[in-house]
Image (cartoon, rainbow, N blue to C red; front, top):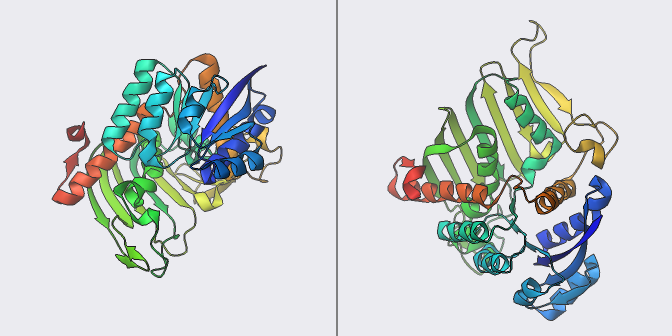
Length: 368
């Protein structure tokens, strides 16, 4: 076993999740690398100290540059706002340290391109934090499709819907400003990543973007509340993707339906321990979607819980992600999804913005 010092930039919602994951991952997966929480960086020293005490970091700082430069910080996790991702990544890459960055990769396509260039030029292990696709159920769904269980895929429908801004009386906050913080910049990357994971490249699309609540107490909303796109995948299949932060009643609507020539698959993130599978070759009178409860026979489940149907949660997704990041560092081999996979998502989002402005179908290759 070899210890590795972890530095986390940002101690809030995602920084805390990554801290818990790094504390737990060695015991869960018996990793060869055993992380310890070396340093946390936040916007003020007082805030950093609070995060240090709450999560068990050895040290705290209000200067992310000091964290990146510190020799006892051997790998860096970026859990700060997306507008900061590019500058931090470039510094981490220049220091020759592995980096895990929360989604989206950057605040723009240009940011994402620069970040990929930085890590690939430096040759450092890199990953982007698409955690939802790591549930045992979704890993199982990918294996079913790869094995041809539902035949040739003909269509994909996916959504990422939540309702944290559904109330028009909710005061305007930072989420209501800047394109990168709107539904297309904030929620869409997860579902686009999901679509790419199952279906491969999106070649062309047409998109629509909307601000539902333009005025809120305390200010106007200058970005989008919801967006949708029709798309075609490289294999010829049709797709429809929808993203909303004003979807009343939805808390974690990470949903996909995949239809093939021999069957179909359904999944809903609000019931993340179940996968629904339909097979056309079931006997007449027994056909219909069957609910498969995840258990130790499904990917990564056994390490997290020994009891079928007992379930895993959000934090377990991040622990699986931590295992993958440590594996990439240990072996020097890329583990999906890398920064380049994050760039592919950014390219689709850029194409969607162009399409929404023009009102026309847009080829994704045209934004490269």
